[in-house]
Image (cartoon, rainbow, N blue to C red):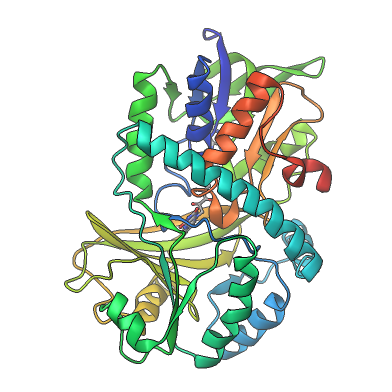
Length: 415
Ligand SMILES: Cc1cc2nc3c(=O)[nH]c(=O)nc-3n(C[C@H](O)[C@H](O)[C@H](O)COP(=O)(O)OP(=O)(O)OC[C@H]3O[C@@H](n4cnc5c(N)ncnc54)[C@H](O)[C@@H]3O)c2cc1C
């Protein structure tokens, strides 16, 4: 048996690291157990947006109709592998059932609170620590080819304005003036100044080094097998490299969280939502602001040190196969919006699994069955953005018994 720690975090993604940060601030000793390398999951090659204006859940009115229409046209960024996988089918049915105004309103309110909380915490994090990650506050530019969609976005924006996250409409000339890298046949753009961006793999690396200096212990290549549970308490975690004991445990295994749900008797309706990215040197005429290509659901993120195209959503189970056709769609999609959509050389082609819940809300809760187990997963498309809020909330639950924000919308009771 390895020596005791106050807290063991299973899963070394951005959520696990953020939990470690706030716990270490409280003088808690922390060990992270990671099956591969720290930051090797979804937290590595994502688009790097701190997308604070991402208040509206994916499941909102009209989404199913819109995606069916786009699938028929062959323009959808969504792919669902034909399957008899019952949990996936049940998940998709529940997702569709949540595409209504009541859920959108409730989920937006809940997301808004944790997004704002995360924003403030990121502000403090970057002001107090020298974390190298190409962090910039430049907003996001939503680009539209289709005039009708551009105009329809007005009602989406009116909804966002209720939360103080509204964007500014730009006609073609104004958009070109703000971002000369975009093509001249753009119908219009909405510029949201509230979003920030950074290079996620640099954030993971730099934050990890900072935490190691402050005492974080990391076990890599140490896949969790199961937990040893006695009288409603977890005693230790069994991994391929040994047993580790602690007073409290955090499950932060992202899309893989359901693997252990049977032993823990938990309901964790998470499906892996596969996405792709290509990382390159910056193109000659690179965009300077992260651009979201609305009709394609693709993001182009420029950094001082590089450039990334990312997006697509595939429900095809746990697979890390790099589908070249899906990857090439990132480039062909970007060609429609940017004059120089690719940079050379291509440095990395990547795929990652987002932990998707059917109501598009994360799970941040204490286990109802093991009172020293805390769950932090299901962050879907926003795990990077919500990392600080989640980490602080989990740390407060462990250290003070309660979080500063209302976690009821993120509890497992809802399933
Ligand atoms: C293409 C793409 C673009 C995205 N863009 C953005 C964006 O711009 N902004 C944003 O906010 N979010 C974005 N996301 C979402 C974001 O990447 C995720 O929500 C976030 O990374 C989830 O973090 P995590 O720590 O929960 O999961 P992960 O980073 O996947 O970490 C979980 C870790 O747990 C480990 N693990 C799993 N099982 C075990 C086990 N049994 N034992 C030990 N370790 C285990 C895994 O190896 C992994 O390292 C994007 C995602 C994708 C795919």
